[in-house]
Length: 111
Image (cartoon, rainbow, N blue to C red; front, top):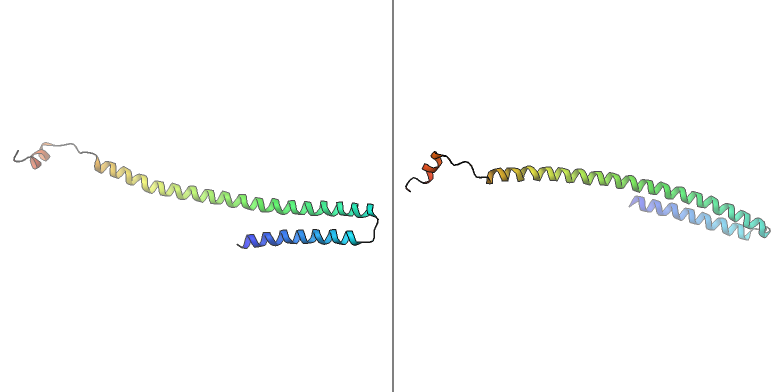
């Protein structure tokens, strides 16, 4: 939850700064051409900052996804290894043993 609120704060700060810059420029007593040039420069500056933040957050998400994927694979492998030997043991137990004369005599004594 800390990451979400942190990302929201950063995005809010960038949007607030952009709105403040635009408002300040629009209400400044300058010629239209100068105002447009300054708006263009500020827009470019804030777009670059936003791109950096997005790249950083995307990188973090990718790293978390890789770690989670590794963890899931490792857990699945451990669970599979825990189940597979049990199945092999069950197969060995269920496999009929070679019947010897001694075994036949034991079970078919009166027959």
